[in-house]
Image (cartoon, rainbow, N blue to C red):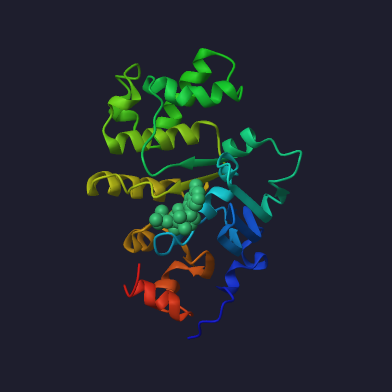
Length: 270
Ligand SMILES: Nc1ncnc2c1ncn2[C@@H]1O[C@H](COP(=O)(O)OP(=O)(O)OP(=O)(O)O)[C@@H](O)[C@H]1O
């Protein structure tokens, strides 16, 4: 085992064996003012995999996740350099419409954040502003399908006009996942989606992540190593703003190549 500052990545991340990556980040740095939070991170995200970002508090997992749909653009002090592609397209290109990008690369946050509107409207809002439907019947179909995919339909089908904020925390988080799904995304980013939920609601979200795998590329930030081991096929370990090691989840947890990964997964820090 070594602990050099280069990232260890499994050979299987190479495009030749897995097809082209859905997203590719190359040499990404993020600064908040003068402070550098992400240092030279390169990573490929694949269509048919759930990728977990793990690492101790403050190592930059959320900051890096937010680079993938340019959410850091909303933070005035944040500056991102490097190259990020979605299906080979530069997400920072002048021609890239950022509203469109955030529909293609949807996001679910730590705290469920439904709009203070009806359950129906929470889902219908995105498809409406993106012009994805032309009439009420089509919109009804999108709302139903999105709620079904998020495993919420049976619980809410008789109260679609009630406020989204009246649902339980776990239901609200599934509503937020349904909202992301409604605009037909290609990638879903999840930033500690279970940290505000109880174990039963957490289990439901984990089950849902399994069901969504293959339909969307998913990247999830989690503090919880058991969760990373349960839901992901690939794991990226971050430390102090760098990507230390990235590879197949089973290997990262049983046979890490780097001493720092070993120390983290055995609970020596974090
Ligand atoms: N909006 C911001 N302005 C300034 N600094 C920030 C901002 N957001 C994050 N940081 C800093 O960037 C570094 C990385 O933070 P980030 O939240 O990405 O880490 P994290 O690994 O997701 O942490 P946690 O697991 O605690 O959520 C930290 O030092 C943090 O204080």
